[in-house]
Image (cartoon, rainbow, N blue to C red):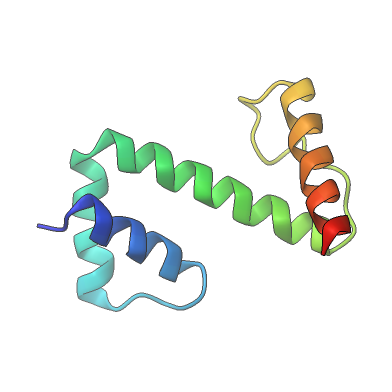
Length: 87
């Protein structure tokens, strides 16, 4: 059984590479049992998709996470743009 630390590392790695069969199975099993890691995975996935859209020049983020209010989505977008400008 994976620890939460192991699961978070695999979640992050899954954005950059294809996980192996046992890694993927272990992560899925952990996510079934750990609600905190489920939430973290959803948040990580959302941020990854959001950053890809911003990098592609799209300002339309409403379809990404219907559970977020328009105000929350706008605050996230504004903060990401501010961070991008600092680099």
